[in-house]
Image (cartoon, rainbow, N blue to C red; front, side, top):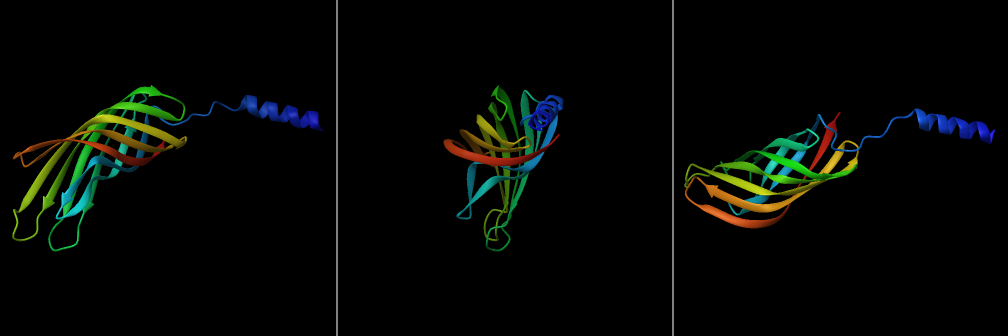
Length: 171
């Protein structure tokens, strides 16, 4: 009986295909991702990012995000919109290391008594590591430099430490 079980197990393993880990070319991922910067909106740190879609082309991945925030107080909403691109410098079966960056915009509708609106643009060149927890679920961590401008009236340059995201990929 044990020879029959061993033969059946070997036959099943031989008939199965190779398992594909994350980063499969042509896959589309949905989830959430945020830029490195947290904007200070009316004294509250508002992350720039939100719901996102990623397209993995194998050698690189690109995507975009949309976010909405409504801090406490009257008539003070914030919208964020942006995109990112990372070229995979190195990949393994369960992770990849990318070089690239993101660009994001934060648009604020200010409360009465302040300027009507403010628009911030953040350019973030940097690196990103994606770790696939399963063949189609990835968490990401990014770091880099933040170049920010507000309504074309000034430019800021800072180094930030961390941003993250999570995506579910459909094959």
